Image 1 (tube, rainbow, N blue to C red):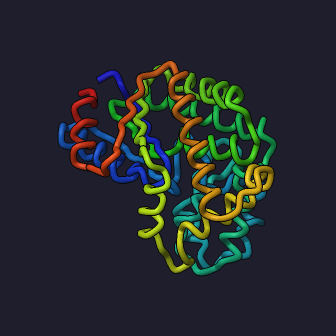
Image 2: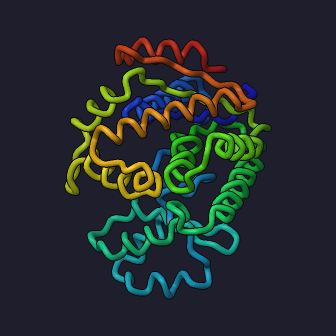
Length: 277
């Protein structure tokens, strides 16, 4: 099989996590090694939900958290002169730690976009070099479109031409892997978000309340006066429209699956028949 990278994308609630797991299981059953990278864990290419800290500053920054330093070490990786801390995976009730690490991410305009872009192209290129020499498949969930379009559209206020340019530049770094992008397209964005909003709750409250608050307070949200659920749906509809347009311009194999009736079994069968072996 020539393909060494499969990326799965779609709006929240479209089934990305479920289908990413199914893809991993599909290839494992066919005796092919597959590595799945979900959102929030350490990632070989993306930096979402990870703190990015210069190595020379690491000890001083982590000094206040000595009581669970071993736990932090388990989720820290050193790359060149930087430490990447997958802080959302660290088991602690210390809220100051999470706020501190969040402030050290590269998303949400915490670094200039030129730095954000350069860091990611460098990491994607390095990932490609490593993946080329391995006899295995890598599966990325939401690391390509979702994470980057959020930064471009909501934070940088990029137009569609700038977004196309960014994604085409980024995908060029992994062309040797013959990548495939799978997009789960939900016809009714409102209904999809209502479904997932009814299911996602945690000790911190409902997912949709936190998501709405985030959207309202982005530069895009403030510019377009986003307020409440209805405006969030309109924004997600625009995001989906932009993603589909970006996909059409990518020089790689893409699979867009429509799921009007939430028939997950039929949708999976449709995808399974299209996956290369």
